Length: 152
Image 1 (spheres, helix red, strand yellow):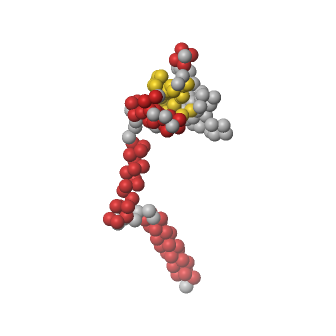
Image 2 (cartoon, one colour):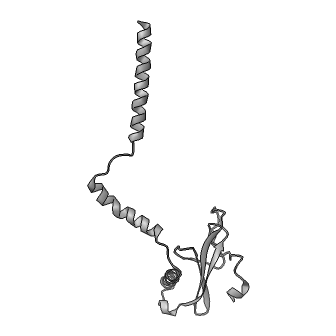
Image 3 (cartoon, one colour):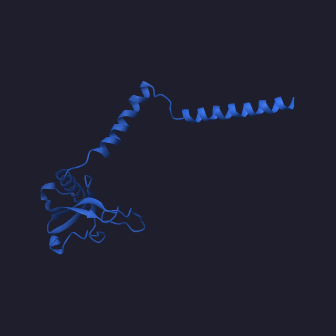
């Protein structure tokens, strides 16, 4: 009788483990309904579009000019593009480190844009194909490929 009880317990344990494994494998495999697909698709499409479609240099220049225009409250036509160069940033901070932040220590292809307004220069940094952002001069770290002549 004892042998039968032990055998039944072993069978019960094996069946329980098997059922548990099946349940774990099926988690997250729920078939989406047509209604949930319609609701989820636009959000996924927006997320994918923003990460898949890279900006070309002209789009980056336009974006930087528009940002500076909004920032200063002036017309974009009053902003002169002083220069734009492809650069390699030395880390994930894209040449604009913020105090107390940690960044990836890898070379990052990118763009450095200089815009002028009334004799004052504004720097914009971006990764290759990314949206440029304003980087204050006192915070900016220039890539080694930028020479003093480039800034004059």
